Length: 160
Image 1 (cartoon, rainbow, N blue to C red):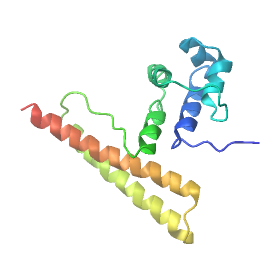
Image 2: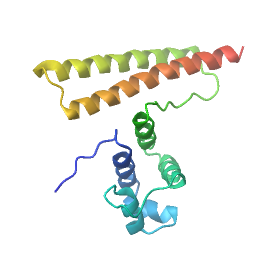
Image 3: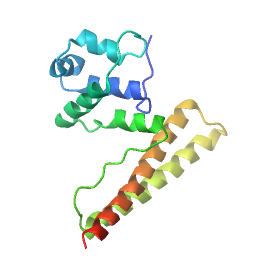
């Protein structure tokens, strides 16, 4: 039996991330100071006796960020989305006007992606669970892009 994992689900996103770590679950378990069997149990929602602590969750994200995995923050985004929030990476320092222009362009692109995803999903007059999951991800990305524009403008105004 194969499982259909999604990065919009916190458990799935954390499991997917651990599998993508260089060397897989075994390597990240070693870095966390636990056996791969224990980490696998913690990452499987079907195992009631083992759970990832908040500190372990954060450590997994940090290790994957250090390993330069592009999707290192996907479990954080999934956790926030589950609770009706959006995780936004805040800009560090005050960026240039060109950086602000890039952020604005990205926000427009992300909003366009939302419209495109809705348009494609409605072609057959019904939205599947998979299409809804993809739409949720596009909406989160659009919200995050707009919030990044706002944070950049705020940082710029406070620097003056």
